[in-house]
Image 1 (cartoon, each protein chain N blue to C red):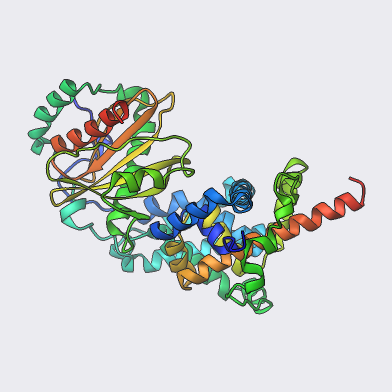
Image 2: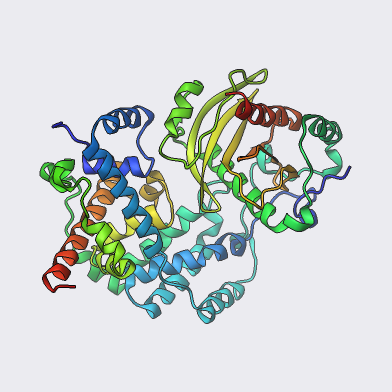
Length: 200
Length: 264
């Protein structure tokens, strides 16, 4: 019987050395996706990813093996965005209260009892041009809410990882994600009302 | 029903981010409250839609090439090479040093494991192996405890209800010197999986349980990073165990998990 190991060619006695490219290149699509969401511009997004790569290359010696490279490089991208012109503009116009208002924190206020078993704004929007409607709703999110939502849902990061990337407490991550989803839901509801009003 | 779950709690529940105590309390409420249960379903639907819409912008090929060229312009140096990982877990093992594997392989056959045709599935299997190793290493490196911290199978198994599109059993009796430490919900190749965390003596092990798909090939594999990855399956489930523990003990654990599916 022969047990075939994976990647036989890399076996040896020398210690594992992962090159920057090995770690970073697979993340390029994800970095570009987030960069485009944040900058809302393809050229700026590419510049942002390039800047991120250069900064990450320079700082790679300080990266601790075994820790979370993805969170590390996303943090660099996020910081690069914050110091960019569009980032400064975007963040300057947003004032966030990271505590959920009590009125908005309880389920029934946002989800009235009467919605049960009825067609909801989300299901209706998802039925008609779902991706477009949702895209519009997400695009309207302020960057601090959009970034945590994308890191959570698209990048599948845990709250602790998002806290590392964004540099905020886990509790704030939790409240921002909830607020982001509530904002998206509200926007979908408004879109739904508009369509009903227009007879669509 | 007046005390409904807050939007933040529902959102965190949908993300699998509540502590085991919080999740249990939320689950108890959800079992009794149609409104919150309905809201949770909406939360999951919205999350699912956001995942699809969020992956919207594709990196153009020419832009990717420009970035790759940019990286290539920086010659490898100490500053651009990752430091060697800690020797205890990440040092490559010399294949010739695996004398125990012959015994392990014999045991595998005795236990009904089959060896895969790695030629056919080598690429996919390698990708999965890398991913499970990454998840296992992340679990070892994380400072935070798993989402479920319990050695009680009656606590761990119910926690996955509603989180996974399948169910599984945990063995009533674990192999000697093996202990269940907890569990996490993870995603492997975009599929939800249960990550069960065990201690085998002083070694840590992760066992991933997922729905079996058409391409799954039960068998044995070894990773270059010093972790053994062992794959077995029932008719419905795929079981992948990863650890740096003695491969024989890992096989016994994987087999116990497999046997438990037949005898709840």
